[in-house]
Each structure stands twice: as C-alpha cells, then as structure tokens.
Length: 114
Image (cartoon, rainbow, N blue to C red; front, side, top):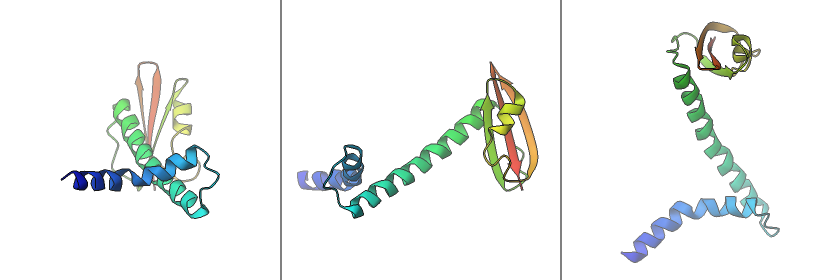
C-alpha cells in the first residue's frame, strides 16, 4: 500500500521536477528536459488564461450574445473605449457584437468576432 502511494505521488509530481530545475537555473539540465519544462509551463498557463477569461466575463455581469466564433473580454478603470481596446483579438478580427458594463469603478467590454 505504501509503495502504491509513493508511486502515485511520484507520477503526479514528477513533471514539476522539470519546472523546478528550470526555475532554479540548473546548469546541468539537458536541453531535452528544458524543452519538457517549457512545454509544461505553456500547457499549465493555458488553463490559467481560460480561467481568467471566464472570471472577467463573470465579473462584468454581461451575458454574451452567442453570435460570432471568437470572444474577447477587456477591462479598464478609465473608459468603455479602453475596455473595448483591451479585449482579446481587438484590431485583428472583425467585431460582430460589443457589450458594455460598468461595475464599481471598472468598465468591461465583451466583444464577439466573426
């Protein structure tokens, strides 16, 4: 039973050893391990960005229209225009729908694109 627990913990935490070695600046880390560590960091950061996108949409109080294919959300403390320009894909894709909201001293914009 103890061996099974040890093997399970090793299996779960082994990939993070690569990230630890990369962050501590291990001079003897092989290039293959550096690539694995950077891949893990990019993979894990994709979950963080998706979560922050959903969190911003929830904070805005906006229920986005289900038009278009892509969605960007922006936030600003200055104006609706700044919030819109901070949205993902702004200036790179054609907007179909823009929704605004103000909560407290923050302006939110949810933009849907083609």
